[in-house]
Length: 282
Image 1 (tube, helix red, strand yellow):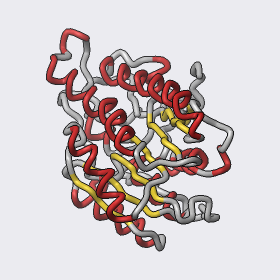
Image 2 (cartoon, one colour):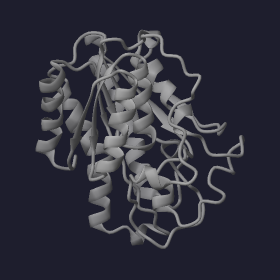
Image 3 (cartoon, helix red, strand yellow):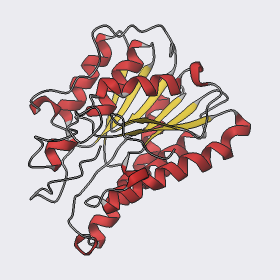
Image 4 (tube, helix red, strand yellow):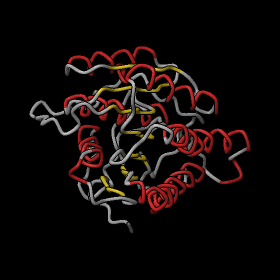
């Protein structure tokens, strides 16, 4: 979810349009075998139309979950994700809207409950990034949009969901490697991702007595629509990792399956680092 070099000419990322990417991201391995780890579970995934979010949705579906995804504007991507989820034999509800609207954050949870009569897994994954050369180039409008999208929505969606989550349910938050080592060209984005780490750890302690687990994943450079939409030159994207390449969404989503299932029943307040071998403090 990060690129260290080559600042783009454009200033705003445009997540989505996965169908236009070349090469296309790998959403799920052909040999990935579901084993019912999430059978009869209901999952709400923000930013679920493409990239990591899409991969999470398809993996969850293969594991037996019902899926509600929230997305912004990219109808074709969202409907494609819905088709992929339904091809796994799972039900899928797609919900379009801007999560920066506090009322909409409540409505997505309400729509999920109305559709499936329950909620067990919340995946906060929606994000935006706007690379800039220096702090002086980050105006208040960008600062507010980045924070409203990347961290305010996590608070608001989770707060609305807590009315319905019960013992053994869980929340999974998407942070980034930038939360741990920073990014000179993504100062505001890195700041929000650091806030997500703190939010996750604090909420995990708060909800431990209710046996509701809160964990997260901190991806490194993953090949998603956010990358070519944000950066003009992606020829060296991910090549500075120890593994020398970017990761694929299908290499990230299984971590969410693990954190959503009973396999991680004694884990809360933790992050899984999927970043091609970069060593970071946990």
